[in-house]
Length: 497
Image (cartoon, rainbow, N blue to C red; front, side, top):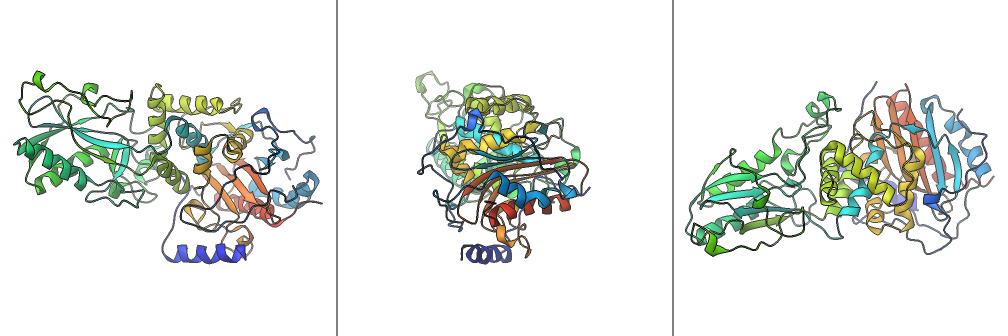
């Protein structure tokens, strides 16, 4: 029944055009006889039957029921069930780690400590890091404040890459805040001071950094695999595979604000030469824009115009929902932007190197042994990134264990096999259908590297954590299908032989 419900909803989603792609699609016998490993220090055995476990998405998509009393697959049973599956040539060079989701016990390990290219499974590490820097319920604010001169407006970038060009949708993640609402507030504020003509400058001092990493091939942006990493952008200009994003997302927002102000009777022009001073950001929590400001109107040379006064502010969807979107759609620019903001809020450098270092540092602070981890970005687009499969699984364990509730919430929004995100069009064939609705995982694809890491519910209702990182010269589509067969086998078997 649970599979039938999952497949039915999957068909409805596909019919409605819910299609997503991996972070990058480039077409271009490994069972161990080593002794079984015990749980790592970062994933120590836990015995509580009430341990928090991922549950249905906010959209109420069905997932398999969990049974904390269900039997754990045996190591021998897993080896027997997966023997022929793991011997698939498409999985040559793959590292494997499979663990019990309740106790953290290692059930099967194949070369788990050797670092491999993680591709987009790196986003799992980034997600853990981001949740460490944002308190629950956090949103991203886009603010307009009064500049130094009367009639000068300062658009303060606050991290929202998905502003709607017109009105926002309070139920949406992409386009929650709208430029029209911001213009409504600003036009009313300046009208109250008798101002009818303004200039708009931009403050980009929040979480600064380059628009793209030097390690990314130019074709990534040209094909929409990634857009510019920025602290402002328009929802309608979001980069998607096959659809390149805006070349100047922050300027696009400023120009759209000018257009909306003009529609409301305020003549506005863009001033790209105005200084972008941190002092233009209202005071509040260090490193975060949009907080309430304190000013001395008597010190202003322009009566009625108080430099730094907030004239309008709109707020994004909760960061938790943005993070969920980044994981579901494997959105590279969004992941980089959130990681950059996390680093900035933690007082670290927010360039690519700084954000990558912050991710590694935050993962280590969560109790994960990061030996062998070498990062150059936060999204996984850089082929030089290296992560052992053990670390990916350890990170998943942090979320499943309940030790970091915010990260556990993020894992609840991972793609579901045959239903959502980058797994919406996978697990749809007759042979793969047994995994539909039962596998929730992050995909990863680069030329020469393929990965799948997440959680799966067995036939008996036992939750397993798995990380599969393949690296080598194999066909992308063949390897993907082979990875899916591993997950299907875990979902279908009791593995108690």
